[in-house]
Length: 251
Image (cartoon, rainbow, N blue to C red; front, side, top):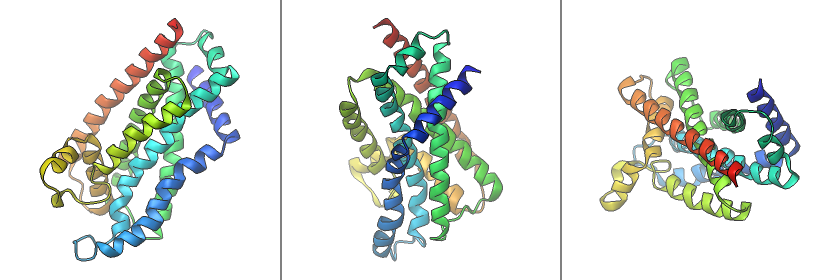
């Protein structure tokens, strides 16, 4: 199948460029190990028993952003050696090219999220909702990574080089991360900051992930709307990526 071939091709590229895996997981891991240890001492008395477990869901989203952002960097490197254009002229459907590229990023995101969760076990950050919770977390991570990979793929096709791309991605990722509940509870916010945090869709994704990590019971009334929201976002980003790839062919 063409999708599998493109997926395997991208995985081989990733294995030959292992630094992309190390770099994308390094920052979230530093947040998990160092920041949670230091900041956790200042959170005593705030009602958060295990601060590492509290921020782990936010870092899961962050590592998804970091890993899938490297999807765009791959595009620029493939353009440099000509592989990108050889794929374009091949008799392959454009949605197949996009899907294969995105699934590689999603797979890498899963691997890095699994590593973070394993490290989190050493800080007593477990999944309290059991096997059903694990399945729901996996689904949400898949949808989140799929959306991000489609978005970053489209952005990489819109910008001239990787320097501009990295600048734009930092301008997108950092506000999304900090204007969410990744590092602190929303009930302590007020005014315009509280509104910005509530309008951030990843605030609600992180909150649902956090409930699956920390709570024994699963409230489907909270989980299902977020899954539906992510599905809509995935459709939009996938469509945008296909449109930008077709635009690349015209150019």
